[in-house]
Structure formats: structure tokens, C-alpha cells
Image (cartoon, rainbow, N blue to C red):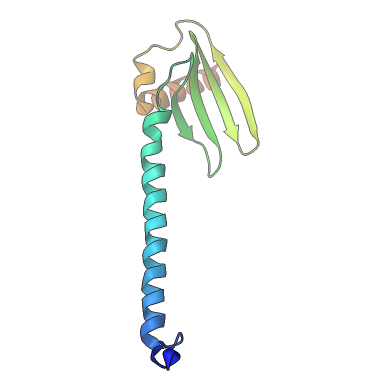
Length: 120
């Protein structure tokens, strides 16, 4: 008979083969997503325009302070879910280019300015 040599679809060997295949496909999807996320930054870091994020500090679980450069102007932004607020616009020459090169320099500079404002 033609149908007598068919494999039972609910056999242990067949189910094991399907399970291994499914796990392999899921792992491949996860690996491709990780690689895409990891290396997407290379194309996104090209700043051809006049707007650039220089540094940032986490202020809480969902809040950040970001220092951006827009042309020749530096702007400190407060960023929270669903909200972006201009905290301060710095005058020309108030922030040096060396300060913006590292986030620790930005943090120190911001702390000094905050202490200076509190003392006044």
C-alpha cells in the first residue's frame, strides 16, 4: 500500500525535529535583530547637518539632560517621556569645545554652573 510507509506526524522524532528547527529559526531572528541594532549606529552617527548631540546626563529613570549644538549655539535640553524643554541657551563662548568632548567634562561643567547659580 502506498500510505503504509508514511511517518506519524505526532511521533517523538518528528516533534523533536520540528522543535529544534523552530528554536534555530527563533535564535537566527534574535541574532539578526541584535546585529542590526548593534551596527545601526554606524550609519546614524554621521552628522552632516548643523544639529549634534554632544553629551547627556541621566537625571532619573526616564529623564535626561542633553547638551546639543545647533550651528554655533549650545542648548541644554531637559528630555522626559512626551516632553522636551529648553533649560538654558548658552551665550557664545560660555562653553568651550574641550568641555563638550567628554561627558565627564560636561557633567563637571554643569555641576559648577548649578553651584554658581545657587550661590548667587
